[in-house]
Length: 122
Image 1 (cartoon, rainbow, N blue to C red):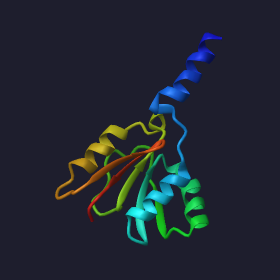
Image 2: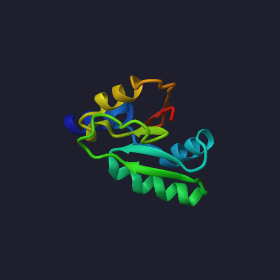
Image 3: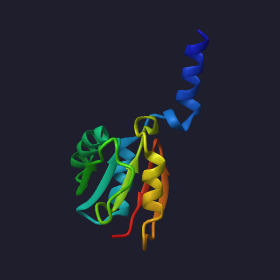
Image 4: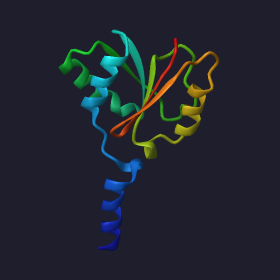
């Protein structure tokens, strides 16, 4: 009983386990990125649901899943980095660091429900 209560508490009060709102993330990206922008996604299995909502809403965005072992975002790969479910992204700190400290990056870091978005400068 105690373990169940503890896990339920994490679901509601720990941002590490919050359920993401993919529809609002797609809507936000559509408003803040130019059409045909590429969004790198970690973990990669989130690309399917994001692509589904993008098509449904008519958002002209390309979602590119990153391999689980990725620890840096190659220069020029994406207009934004979208991270969720940090417990499924083993190198998320290094990945974020690589984007934050890339040369000439005029980034903007935004937290959405269940997602962290880092807009990159290409």
